Length: 317
Image (tube, rainbow, N blue to C red; front, side, top):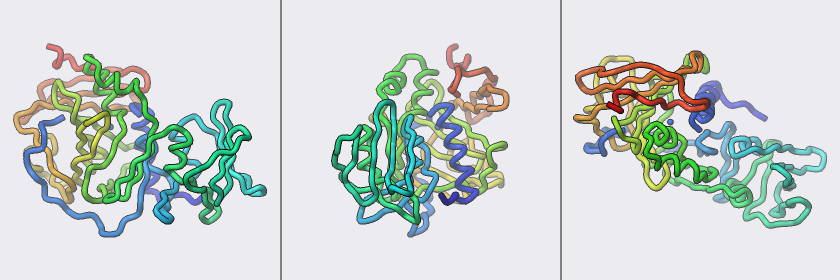
């Protein structure tokens, strides 16, 4: 299969790292941002359990297709394509599925069933219809027409239960694992200068004592803001920032100028924020409590395995 460009590979790596660690608050938005429109024409994208598709997404006659191997982000599947028989095989547990390009018939353990759309081949690559695969494997599928983004995810009741926990550390961790969807009225912004696997960084920022709103700072280049509603995290605002000193509204934790914004800028006026940054090398999370006047408290501790959020003593005082 064709490989993606270096920038996309680097961005995807960071999403996978974040997803493997956690599966990414402020006051409600009070002022509008200056919106820089995305390009009028942009390629469709797909997110599988919050991880961006590795290969190109194809839309044919209103049907969205992703590469066969993207299923690895949906669950514990093994798959293959037999070039001789022209058949696609997918196995999970004791179940085995056989699909044929351009056929709406799927065999599950030898029994025929119907698909709403048929798989196709694109330049010799097996492509699966996203919605039909979701229906077959019990995943949820959404489509954002404005952003041309498809989402397929596996519902997890345990994450919702953890999000509703009275333990703030557990609830925040669950908040980062919730399905994420764009609520922007344009294509989302992208990291302009990704640092790569070794130097990349992601910081998660919540309002002190809260769990239902958070920022994600990627490589000090792209800032994204999410609000949680009905068990999902909605992307409400983004900004690409420069290295030049400056401010963006009252977002005091950002000390550089914005070169592009999308969505409605949130406000943190009068708030105290708590940020979390995980170090893969040190296997620990550093945290900082900060308000407009500066840092109030900071420290670091080791999170539980495959997690990033830690308890902050200052919040429990």
